[in-house]
Figure 1 (cartoon, rainbow, N blue to C red):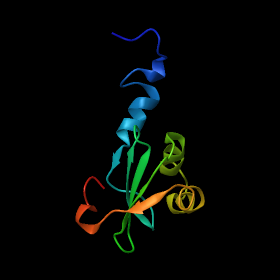
Figure 2 (cartoon, rainbow, N blue to C red):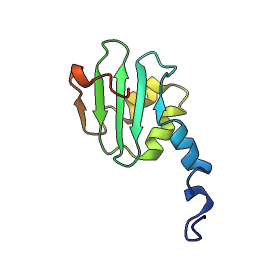
Figure 3 (cartoon, rainbow, N blue to C red):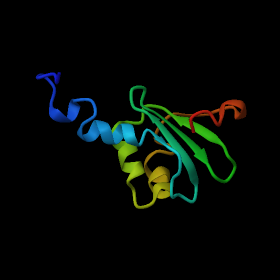
Length: 102
């Protein structure tokens, strides 16, 4: 039963929520630099695996609208460099855990 205190877009499985859920585990990106992206909407964590060296980085405190803009950018690599890299705290994932979910 829908919650009357929530807007239609806030209802599970509708509108923006369905769209975000659909792109949560994107297996492939058309990007020359980034191979895969995983976004944890609740924790605001963005995990990126890079094509050049296979390095996996986790970026903290990334808002959902920044993730949306990244996924739908004309150039994912350019958007990433200009709006995420260096703008949010980041840490490298050790190699043994690098291929989990990304």
